[in-house]
Amino acid sequence: MKRRILLGIAGWLTVAAAATTAGIAAIAVLEDGITGRSVRPLDDEAVHRALSRSGATSAPAAPSPVPTSTGGVTRNLAAGGGTVTARCEKGLATIVAAVPSQGFHTSALGHGPAASVSLTFESDDEEYAVTVTCQGGSPVAHAAKDDGHRGRHRGRG
Image 1 (cartoon, rainbow, N blue to C red):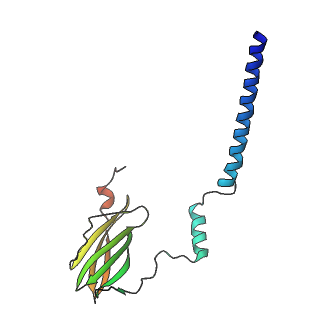
Image 2: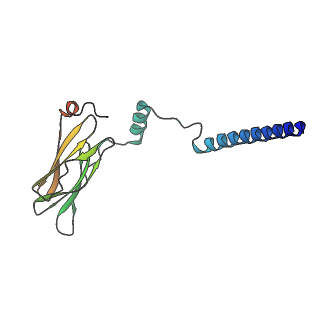
Image 3: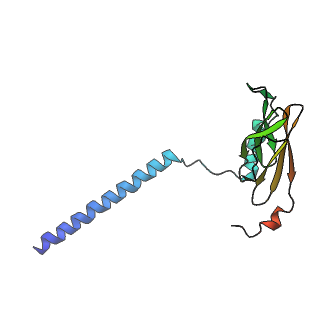
């Protein structure tokens, strides 16, 4: 009887060890297929080299104004900390959308329509106050970097 129990335990341990080994081998095979051994993160220098080879620029060229069906003009405007899509109609500016750059968020967003509308793009290190006005019937963004931002938000987590 004791021999039967010992054989049962030994058999169970053998099957458990074989299943564990098979599981580890399967995970190793799947991991190579998913992430690959050759995948490694790029350092800052490698990113800059890759971007310079691709011809990427830090700021896209300003698109030409797009007239809207109601006679206004809508433009995407690059501003410090993000991009603003704004429309001018009858001399009044309206912020249609604000897309912060990576690491930034928007605050104090005034949509308009008004003669002047504004928003703020903020990060942990920088803050840009962006004001949109209409000049010649097209929206124009004016961005000003707030140098006092670092001291005001020190200690934020």
